[in-house]
Length: 367
Ligand SMILES: *Cc1c(COP(=O)(O)O)cnc(C)c1O
Image (tube, rainbow, N blue to C red):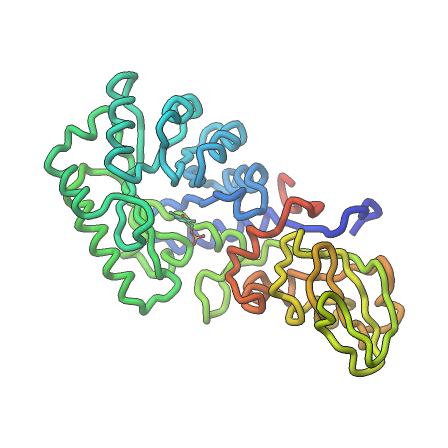
């Protein structure tokens, strides 16, 4: 951490690791093209930096959730195909057209509106979401039948892609995968020819049958393990560090933090670090999380508070557990997945929680 370390914590994002993860995922695809999900600000890592890094690695097809995310990215990705997963809401049609964004149409009424817009003002591209089991977004089987019986409803639309989303891709043995793939094939057989996209990160690892024409990985690009229970084939991408701002020696029967949740049992050295839940370091890590200092594992004691955590540094050499020393909260030995498991959540939530309050440093080519 540099001399400019006035802010609480430092989040380091390795753009080279993201590019390498993209190449590793692409190498898993037999014939599909590899796209990238960069919704939610590239899972909290900064889409305006991550998007261009992926484009330099060869990515041309991007997926965001909201119209606004697509609009913000368009100037950074002038030549890319940008899909908006949440589709086009009434009144948004003009903005989609102005920024050359491709809506992923999620319902027949939405399709009808986009078709009308296209018939009146010129044919527009779209993707079509088929619900094969998520029950969240997309056309269900009866909707597909309606469309198959009246293909004119697609007039004014250049249907580029059919999309569906797997509910259980990280569980290769889950029968839901086969069920969804079969439903996707059935729907596609009834619709006009278009590219197909089913696989998220874990879906890629289900093999060629799930890869179709375009993969849409997100989490794996950012270092989350797409094959839980097996070694992570991805490189770690983020490191979160905070600085010790005070150290104290205390003994039994003192307690630490809110709720007096941690009782001191032996003579201890407790360090206070400037990272808290307002930074996205989840409160559920209270009394459970682990950090690293001077190459040693140090436990979080007591509750995570808004701006601070307290760690037990009793076993750390006294000259290392000092004010200003840098503590690693995520990275290296404590991957995003490790922290997620400790917190009782998944790596996605850890990443997207990492708040805008951190000072961010991008490393790697183009940083
Ligand atoms: C978020 C998302 C993805 C990416 O999923 P990962 O599990 O992060 O790889 C792909 N497709 C859709 C529809 C999504 O919502």
